[in-house]
Length: 281
Image 1 (cartoon, helix red, strand yellow):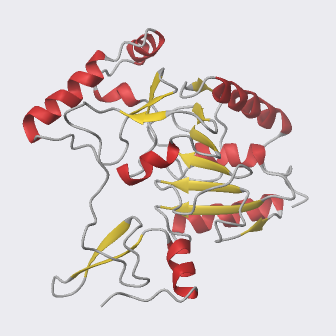
Image 2: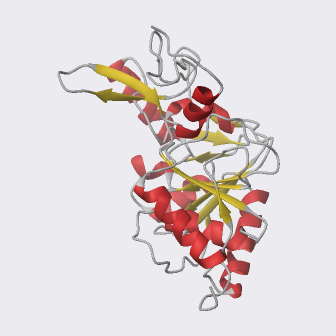
Image 3: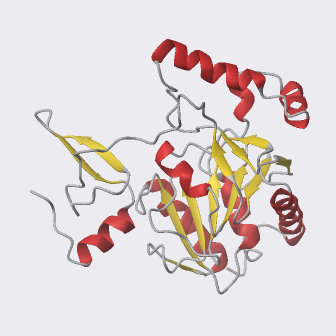
């Protein structure tokens, strides 16, 4: 550890990122440009989220990292291993013990507390990229709250398919002002952002953007009165390991074509089994 500054990044870099985080918190949903640094992880492995984590983490913090809900994926394990190497802080798989949670594509099933921070790895921060390729134009549209093209895109989706077919990255309106990309979380997780107790920070390293959803902030999925937003339907399905029918489930196709379901959140599933939850027959 003596070969590195605590948290790998130099102190000037940390201060710059913290200032940008403060601005992002002050203007919920607004994308704040920042000077993204090089870190020893492949681009696309969460370099933006990692820079936020390294800028905020202290010696008393406890870090949890998940990849699509899993604590043991290659991405999550490498992030924890790297942060331990450059800080010496404790890492955990227990959502309840963590003070910082870095996540790729999921929000934990456990409701987070006011003293916890959820840090998202974001590949594409611009929600208007679907409807306008020009960065200059998307900035103008955000400044003027000119979101007509986004609403038109959702309307065309409904005309074609009788519903909005967006799965992950469902666009949301933050604080009734900015349309925001919530990162590639499933629709199941979108309602958890609304009036949440904890701070949500989003970092896109390749795109050099940071944005935030502060605690107790309105986050509303874009919807029409006659076509309301809905989450994934797991009716009649349950986790094959813990029996949960109230969590986001991953589908597994076994040999022979048999389909089973397991909890995406491995910590949630493990704690249910430890508490004596039984699998429904």
